Image (cartoon, rainbow, N blue to C red; front, side, top):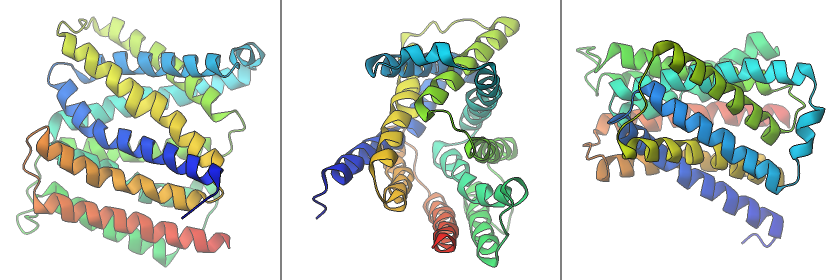
Length: 299
Protein backbone atom coordinates (compact mmCIF):
# COMPACT_ATOMS: atom_id res chain seq x y z
CA UNK A 1 0.00 0.00 0.00
CA UNK A 2 1.35 3.43 -0.94
CA UNK A 3 1.97 5.53 2.18
CA UNK A 4 3.21 8.60 0.36
CA UNK A 5 0.61 11.35 1.10
CA UNK A 6 1.25 12.98 -2.28
CA UNK A 7 0.67 9.74 -4.17
CA UNK A 8 -2.47 9.01 -2.14
CA UNK A 9 -3.88 12.44 -2.95
CA UNK A 10 -2.93 12.02 -6.61
CA UNK A 11 -4.80 8.71 -6.69
CA UNK A 12 -7.87 10.25 -5.03
CA UNK A 13 -7.93 13.12 -7.55
CA UNK A 14 -7.44 10.71 -10.47
CA UNK A 15 -10.15 8.30 -9.32
CA UNK A 16 -12.56 11.23 -8.80
CA UNK A 17 -11.85 12.44 -12.36
CA UNK A 18 -12.32 8.94 -13.81
CA UNK A 19 -15.65 8.50 -12.00
CA UNK A 20 -16.83 11.85 -13.40
CA UNK A 21 -15.75 10.98 -16.94
CA UNK A 22 -17.52 7.61 -16.66
CA UNK A 23 -20.84 9.47 -16.37
CA UNK A 24 -20.53 11.86 -19.29
CA UNK A 25 -21.54 9.57 -22.17
CA UNK A 26 -24.84 9.01 -20.36
CA UNK A 27 -25.11 12.74 -19.62
CA UNK A 28 -24.53 13.56 -23.31
CA UNK A 29 -27.35 11.29 -24.46
CA UNK A 30 -29.79 12.46 -21.79
CA UNK A 31 -29.03 16.12 -22.55
CA UNK A 32 -29.34 15.62 -26.31
CA UNK A 33 -32.89 14.35 -25.84
CA UNK A 34 -33.95 17.94 -25.10
CA UNK A 35 -31.06 20.01 -26.54
CA UNK A 36 -29.40 20.39 -29.91
CA UNK A 37 -25.60 19.89 -29.99
CA UNK A 38 -25.19 23.69 -30.31
CA UNK A 39 -27.42 24.41 -27.31
CA UNK A 40 -25.59 21.82 -25.22
CA UNK A 41 -22.20 23.29 -26.11
CA UNK A 42 -23.40 26.83 -25.40
CA UNK A 43 -24.41 25.98 -21.83
CA UNK A 44 -21.55 23.58 -21.17
CA UNK A 45 -18.75 25.85 -22.42
CA UNK A 46 -20.09 28.77 -20.36
CA UNK A 47 -20.28 26.55 -17.26
CA UNK A 48 -16.77 25.19 -17.83
CA UNK A 49 -15.26 28.66 -18.27
CA UNK A 50 -17.07 29.94 -15.17
CA UNK A 51 -15.97 26.98 -13.03
CA UNK A 52 -12.34 27.44 -14.10
CA UNK A 53 -12.58 31.18 -13.37
CA UNK A 54 -13.80 30.32 -9.84
CA UNK A 55 -10.86 27.93 -9.41
CA UNK A 56 -8.42 30.65 -10.48
CA UNK A 57 -10.04 33.09 -8.04
CA UNK A 58 -9.97 30.54 -5.20
CA UNK A 59 -6.26 29.94 -5.76
CA UNK A 60 -5.48 33.67 -5.89
CA UNK A 61 -4.39 33.73 -9.51
CA UNK A 62 -6.86 36.10 -11.15
CA UNK A 63 -4.21 38.84 -11.30
CA UNK A 64 -2.22 36.66 -13.70
CA UNK A 65 -4.88 37.35 -16.33
CA UNK A 66 -3.75 40.95 -16.77
CA UNK A 67 -0.16 39.87 -17.41
CA UNK A 68 -1.04 37.62 -20.33
CA UNK A 69 0.59 38.55 -23.62
CA UNK A 70 -1.18 39.05 -26.92
CA UNK A 71 0.54 35.86 -28.06
CA UNK A 72 -1.00 33.89 -25.17
CA UNK A 73 -4.44 35.22 -26.04
CA UNK A 74 -3.98 34.45 -29.74
CA UNK A 75 -2.89 30.88 -28.96
CA UNK A 76 -5.89 30.39 -26.69
CA UNK A 77 -8.23 31.77 -29.34
CA UNK A 78 -6.89 29.21 -31.82
CA UNK A 79 -7.04 26.37 -29.32
CA UNK A 80 -10.52 27.44 -28.19
CA UNK A 81 -11.71 27.29 -31.79
CA UNK A 82 -10.42 23.71 -31.98
CA UNK A 83 -11.56 22.70 -28.49
CA UNK A 84 -14.23 23.18 -27.25
CA UNK A 85 -15.94 24.78 -30.27
CA UNK A 86 -15.35 22.49 -33.26
CA UNK A 87 -14.47 19.35 -31.29
CA UNK A 88 -17.59 19.26 -29.11
CA UNK A 89 -19.97 20.29 -31.88
CA UNK A 90 -18.77 17.27 -33.85
CA UNK A 91 -18.70 14.96 -30.80
CA UNK A 92 -22.21 15.93 -29.66
CA UNK A 93 -23.54 15.41 -33.17
CA UNK A 94 -21.95 11.95 -33.20
CA UNK A 95 -23.71 11.14 -29.93
CA UNK A 96 -26.92 12.46 -31.45
CA UNK A 97 -26.66 9.95 -34.30
CA UNK A 98 -25.19 6.90 -32.54
CA UNK A 99 -25.98 4.85 -29.46
CA UNK A 100 -23.73 5.95 -26.58
CA UNK A 101 -22.14 2.48 -26.45
CA UNK A 102 -20.79 3.12 -29.97
CA UNK A 103 -19.95 6.84 -29.88
CA UNK A 104 -17.90 6.66 -26.71
CA UNK A 105 -15.43 3.89 -27.70
CA UNK A 106 -15.01 5.32 -31.21
CA UNK A 107 -13.97 8.63 -29.66
CA UNK A 108 -11.43 6.70 -27.54
CA UNK A 109 -9.36 5.98 -30.66
CA UNK A 110 -7.73 9.40 -30.22
CA UNK A 111 -4.95 7.69 -28.23
CA UNK A 112 -3.78 5.71 -31.26
CA UNK A 113 -4.35 8.63 -33.65
CA UNK A 114 -2.14 10.75 -31.36
CA UNK A 115 0.73 8.31 -31.89
CA UNK A 116 0.34 8.61 -35.66
CA UNK A 117 0.13 12.41 -35.63
CA UNK A 118 3.28 12.52 -33.50
CA UNK A 119 5.25 11.30 -36.52
CA UNK A 120 4.74 14.35 -38.82
CA UNK A 121 4.15 16.95 -36.09
CA UNK A 122 6.64 15.93 -33.37
CA UNK A 123 9.22 14.10 -35.47
CA UNK A 124 8.72 10.76 -33.73
CA UNK A 125 9.35 7.45 -35.49
CA UNK A 126 6.53 5.24 -36.71
CA UNK A 127 7.24 1.81 -35.23
CA UNK A 128 5.84 -1.61 -36.04
CA UNK A 129 4.31 -1.54 -32.56
CA UNK A 130 2.41 1.66 -33.39
CA UNK A 131 1.17 0.17 -36.65
CA UNK A 132 0.07 -2.99 -34.87
CA UNK A 133 -1.73 -0.94 -32.22
CA UNK A 134 -3.46 1.06 -34.95
CA UNK A 135 -4.63 -2.06 -36.76
CA UNK A 136 -5.95 -3.54 -33.51
CA UNK A 137 -7.83 -0.32 -32.68
CA UNK A 138 -9.22 -0.10 -36.23
CA UNK A 139 -10.43 -3.68 -35.97
CA UNK A 140 -12.22 -2.65 -32.76
CA UNK A 141 -13.77 0.29 -34.61
CA UNK A 142 -15.10 -2.05 -37.30
CA UNK A 143 -16.55 -4.45 -34.71
CA UNK A 144 -18.37 -1.61 -32.92
CA UNK A 145 -19.50 0.23 -36.06
CA UNK A 146 -21.03 -2.87 -37.66
CA UNK A 147 -22.39 -4.24 -34.34
CA UNK A 148 -20.27 -7.34 -34.97
CA UNK A 149 -21.70 -8.00 -38.43
CA UNK A 150 -18.37 -7.72 -40.20
CA UNK A 151 -19.44 -9.86 -43.14
CA UNK A 152 -22.38 -7.60 -43.98
CA UNK A 153 -20.34 -4.40 -43.45
CA UNK A 154 -23.52 -2.51 -42.57
CA UNK A 155 -22.83 0.53 -40.35
CA UNK A 156 -25.36 1.73 -37.78
CA UNK A 157 -24.85 5.31 -38.97
CA UNK A 158 -22.00 6.01 -41.41
CA UNK A 159 -22.18 9.73 -40.66
CA UNK A 160 -22.21 9.13 -36.90
CA UNK A 161 -19.19 6.82 -37.15
CA UNK A 162 -17.36 9.35 -39.32
CA UNK A 163 -18.08 12.18 -36.88
CA UNK A 164 -17.00 10.13 -33.85
CA UNK A 165 -13.69 9.30 -35.54
CA UNK A 166 -13.31 12.93 -36.67
CA UNK A 167 -13.73 14.04 -33.04
CA UNK A 168 -10.97 11.59 -32.04
CA UNK A 169 -8.69 13.12 -34.69
CA UNK A 170 -9.42 16.65 -33.46
CA UNK A 171 -8.79 15.69 -29.83
CA UNK A 172 -5.42 14.15 -30.78
CA UNK A 173 -4.58 17.29 -32.78
CA UNK A 174 -5.50 19.43 -29.76
CA UNK A 175 -3.05 17.55 -27.53
CA UNK A 176 -0.33 17.80 -30.19
CA UNK A 177 -0.87 21.58 -30.18
CA UNK A 178 -0.49 21.64 -26.39
CA UNK A 179 2.76 19.68 -26.18
CA UNK A 180 5.05 22.72 -26.29
CA UNK A 181 2.74 25.12 -24.44
CA UNK A 182 4.46 26.81 -21.50
CA UNK A 183 1.32 28.46 -20.13
CA UNK A 184 -0.11 27.16 -16.85
CA UNK A 185 -2.57 24.38 -17.82
CA UNK A 186 -5.47 25.64 -15.67
CA UNK A 187 -5.05 29.17 -16.99
CA UNK A 188 -4.87 27.83 -20.55
CA UNK A 189 -8.00 25.74 -20.02
CA UNK A 190 -9.90 28.78 -18.75
CA UNK A 191 -8.83 30.84 -21.74
CA UNK A 192 -9.64 28.04 -24.18
CA UNK A 193 -13.13 27.55 -22.79
CA UNK A 194 -13.65 31.29 -22.54
CA UNK A 195 -12.83 31.78 -26.21
CA UNK A 196 -14.74 28.59 -27.05
CA UNK A 197 -17.84 30.03 -25.40
CA UNK A 198 -17.46 33.28 -27.38
CA UNK A 199 -17.22 31.30 -30.65
CA UNK A 200 -20.20 29.15 -29.67
CA UNK A 201 -22.27 32.18 -28.66
CA UNK A 202 -21.40 33.92 -31.94
CA UNK A 203 -22.41 30.86 -33.97
CA UNK A 204 -25.61 30.49 -31.95
CA UNK A 205 -26.53 34.14 -32.64
CA UNK A 206 -25.76 33.74 -36.35
CA UNK A 207 -27.92 30.60 -36.50
CA UNK A 208 -30.77 32.31 -34.68
CA UNK A 209 -31.14 29.18 -32.57
CA UNK A 210 -33.61 29.23 -29.66
CA UNK A 211 -32.66 28.88 -26.01
CA UNK A 212 -33.62 25.58 -24.35
CA UNK A 213 -37.16 25.68 -22.97
CA UNK A 214 -36.90 22.48 -20.93
CA UNK A 215 -35.17 23.11 -17.54
CA UNK A 216 -33.64 19.64 -17.80
CA UNK A 217 -31.68 20.93 -20.78
CA UNK A 218 -29.96 23.56 -18.66
CA UNK A 219 -29.29 20.97 -15.96
CA UNK A 220 -27.64 18.68 -18.50
CA UNK A 221 -25.54 21.49 -19.95
CA UNK A 222 -24.32 22.55 -16.51
CA UNK A 223 -23.49 18.94 -15.61
CA UNK A 224 -21.51 18.42 -18.81
CA UNK A 225 -19.71 21.74 -18.33
CA UNK A 226 -18.66 20.80 -14.80
CA UNK A 227 -17.95 17.07 -15.02
CA UNK A 228 -16.79 16.58 -18.61
CA UNK A 229 -14.92 19.86 -18.97
CA UNK A 230 -14.16 22.21 -16.07
CA UNK A 231 -13.78 20.61 -12.64
CA UNK A 232 -12.80 17.18 -13.93
CA UNK A 233 -9.89 18.51 -15.98
CA UNK A 234 -8.71 20.40 -12.90
CA UNK A 235 -8.84 17.21 -10.79
CA UNK A 236 -6.89 15.31 -13.45
CA UNK A 237 -4.25 18.03 -13.75
CA UNK A 238 -3.84 18.05 -9.95
CA UNK A 239 -3.38 14.28 -9.98
CA UNK A 240 -0.73 14.44 -12.70
CA UNK A 241 1.08 17.25 -10.88
CA UNK A 242 1.17 15.44 -7.53
CA UNK A 243 2.20 11.99 -8.73
CA UNK A 244 5.72 10.76 -9.34
CA UNK A 245 4.39 8.16 -11.78
CA UNK A 246 2.31 9.70 -14.53
CA UNK A 247 2.09 6.29 -16.22
CA UNK A 248 0.51 4.69 -13.13
CA UNK A 249 -2.05 7.47 -12.80
CA UNK A 250 -2.62 7.73 -16.55
CA UNK A 251 -3.64 4.09 -16.81
CA UNK A 252 -6.66 4.77 -14.58
CA UNK A 253 -8.40 6.78 -17.30
CA UNK A 254 -9.04 3.58 -19.26
CA UNK A 255 -11.32 2.31 -16.50
CA UNK A 256 -13.84 5.08 -17.37
CA UNK A 257 -15.22 3.66 -20.65
CA UNK A 258 -15.98 0.29 -19.03
CA UNK A 259 -17.75 1.93 -16.08
CA UNK A 260 -19.56 4.06 -18.63
CA UNK A 261 -21.01 0.98 -20.35
CA UNK A 262 -22.62 -0.01 -17.04
CA UNK A 263 -24.31 3.40 -16.75
CA UNK A 264 -25.31 3.35 -20.41
CA UNK A 265 -27.09 0.05 -19.80
CA UNK A 266 -28.80 0.85 -16.50
CA UNK A 267 -29.52 4.59 -16.93
CA UNK A 268 -30.09 4.96 -20.67
CA UNK A 269 -31.60 1.51 -21.02
CA UNK A 270 -29.36 0.59 -23.97
CA UNK A 271 -28.80 -3.13 -24.36
CA UNK A 272 -25.00 -3.25 -24.47
CA UNK A 273 -24.08 -5.51 -27.36
CA UNK A 274 -21.19 -7.97 -27.06
CA UNK A 275 -19.70 -6.25 -30.10
CA UNK A 276 -19.54 -2.93 -28.22
CA UNK A 277 -17.67 -4.49 -25.30
CA UNK A 278 -15.32 -6.54 -27.49
CA UNK A 279 -14.59 -3.55 -29.74
CA UNK A 280 -13.88 -1.34 -26.72
CA UNK A 281 -11.48 -3.96 -25.32
CA UNK A 282 -9.67 -4.03 -28.68
CA UNK A 283 -9.40 -0.24 -28.86
CA UNK A 284 -8.13 0.11 -25.29
CA UNK A 285 -5.71 -2.81 -25.82
CA UNK A 286 -4.36 -1.04 -28.90
CA UNK A 287 -3.87 2.19 -26.96
CA UNK A 288 -2.15 0.43 -24.06
CA UNK A 289 0.03 -1.58 -26.43
CA UNK A 290 1.16 1.61 -28.12
CA UNK A 291 1.68 3.39 -24.76
CA UNK A 292 3.83 0.50 -23.57
CA UNK A 293 6.14 1.04 -26.49
CA UNK A 294 6.27 4.78 -25.85
CA UNK A 295 7.15 4.29 -22.18
CA UNK A 296 9.97 1.87 -23.02
CA UNK A 297 11.41 4.28 -25.60
CA UNK A 298 11.77 6.90 -22.85
CA UNK A 299 13.81 4.62 -20.59
